Length: 278
Ligand code: FES
Image (cartoon, rainbow, N blue to C red; front, side, top):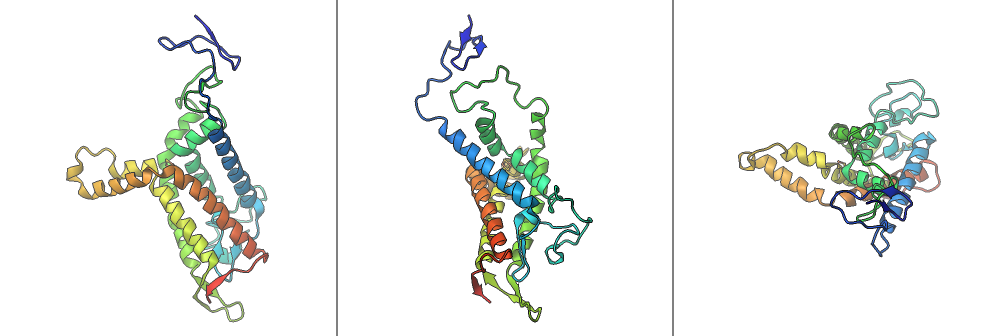
């Protein structure tokens, strides 16, 4: 027996599966979450691409605010004060981001993230678009072939992302200073920008630590939790965070855009930073 689906595909029903001719029997608005995901992810990708290549308004020297899209800034194109780790390369051509050493790993970390996979497989590949909605593809090979087999590299991206989160934390700590442009003296300072950077770093840690690979690193492959009480304790805490990984994934998309946007506004002189101390 063969089945013609309402999507126009012609497909024999799998053995033992009911012969349902409609693509789905769902009557709710199942298309709404994938549509919202597609819009949210596309907005982030477009914004991050434009800003990463923008090449200006990413650093506020007076308050030591560095946009996360430019950290670490290690080329000769960077403002010297923004190069916390020194300048390792010459000038960057316009089509390469200043944060060339970190962005590919951060992109890889998010692209291979278990939650984002679910979101973009549904939103962009319709594979499947939602629960109980047949996908339009005739064949399903899962993540067993190139390029999707590369999703297995997620744990390695996690290690690098962990190191980059430490770097973002360092950038945030530096933002608790202000430098007097007249005297060049630096002292403790706190502004709205500092708080925004702080919130962003907290969000990035929540997202990174709630990663499924982090959960595995802390408690995976243990045969007896009772023999590893410290790792068990950490694993339990990570597991609690892990249940909110989707929330942190979206939260950090928002905080990354907000942080960069605020730094851009202050760095370009469009607004002044709201200072709380100094
Ligand atoms: Fe999402 Fe690792 S970052 S699962």
